[in-house]
Length: 135
Image 1 (cartoon, rainbow, N blue to C red):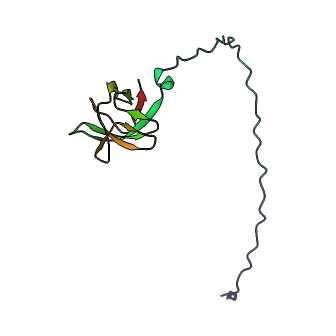
Image 2: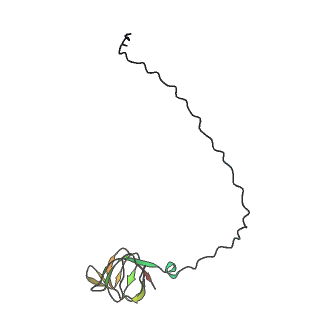
Image 3: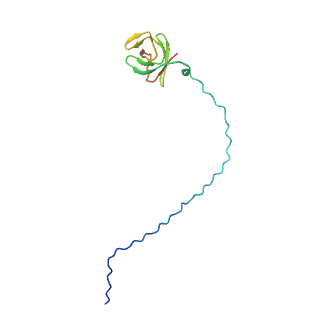
């Protein structure tokens, strides 16, 4: 009987594998041939008609509405007097009316100047950011 020699437990040396860098694959870019397109006919630009709101002088903007008393709070950008004919226009609002009464801090006045916040009785519902112009 032949006895085999036992190997000593020695740590093996790990050999590093060489990393082979792969070259990036370049894709060939082929240009598409231009297809025969029909030439586009260009027409003269049509000017849009100017709306009346652009011509009218903006007097103010609605900041609040009280539905029970049908009153609007308006921040004025111009002079407004009792008897003036105004137009209130917004996204869903568009009507004209004559100014019957103006109030500033619950005091009735005949006219209001630029920068004042006034209370105004209105004939129809108005919303915030509706424009108030002279009609």
